[in-house]
Image (cartoon, rainbow, N blue to C red):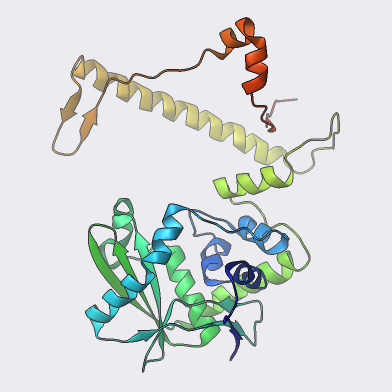
Amino acid sequence: MFEKISLTGVDNAGWLRLRKSGIGGSDAGAICGVNPYSSAMKVFQDKTSEAVEEQDNEAIRIGHDLEDYVAQRFTEATGLKVRKSNFMYRSVEHPFMIADVDRLVVGEDAGLECKTASVYNADKWADGNIPLHYIMQCYHYMAVTGKRIWYIAAVILGREFTYRKLEWDDELISRLTAIEDDFWNNHVVPGIIPPPDGSRACDEVIEQYFHTARKESAIELVGFDEKLRRREEILGFISELQEEQKQIEQEVKLFMQDNEFASSERFHVSWKNLDSTKLDTKRIREEMPELYADYGKVSHSRRFEVKAA
C-alpha cells in the first residue's frame, strides 16, 4: 500500500525538499554500499541538512532531456505503452520509503526506469548486465509501489539502445527494506552518522563536517591500535606493488626507447611527448609580492598523518 503525493505545481526546489522526507530510488544503491558515486554517509548528509542543493551538470541535463527519447525507444522495442505519473509515492507500511518513478507501463503491473550511459560505461551493460545500483533502484520502486515488474531501458550514447526486465524478488526486497529501515531509523532520525565505507564520497562528507580543527585540541585514541597497525601493513603492500608496477613500466620503456607506440595482440602502449606550462609561484612571490597577494588564493584543509608512538 502507498499514498500519492501530487507533484502538480511543485517546482524543482519543492521536489528536492520532498525527496528529503524519505529514501528515494536513487538513494537505495548508496545505502546498500553498491553505488560507486555515492555512499550511505552522503545520503545521510543530504537527508539531515537544511540545504536544498540543485544539482546541475551535463550528465544530469542529458539524462533529463533524453528521458522521453528512452521511453519512446522502449515502446518501439517492446510494443508496451508507457505514461508519466505526476505523483510521488510513499509506502504506508514504511513511510521512510518514497518513489518518484520515470514511467508506468499501461495495462501491466509494471514501471520503467529510463537511463542514459556514456560509451565508456557500455561494458557495464554488456551480456545482459545492469549496474548494481540501478538494480537496487528498480527494486526500491517495486517495494514502494507493489508492482511486480520493473523494466529498465538505457541508451548507450552513440552506440545502442537496450532494456532489461526485473521481476519481484521477496528475499531481495525484504533485505533492501530492512537495510533502509536501519539507515533511516538508526541514523537519519537520531542524527547518527553511518559508518564510513572507504569511498571518496565519504572523504568529501567527513571533510565538510569537520573541515577545521580546534587549535591544540587533543583526545585519547581508544580502540584503533589494531586498525592502525593494519593500515601500516596495507601501506607496505601498496609500496611493494607500486615498486613492481614501476619496474614493469620501466622495462617496457627501455624496450620502446624513442618509439611513441608499441602494440601486441593484447595491449596497446603509448609513451607520448607532453608539453606543459606552469607558473613559477615562488618567483612571482619573491619578485612581485603585491601581485601574488592580489591573486593568491588561500585554501583550507586538514592533513591526516599517523606516526608510531
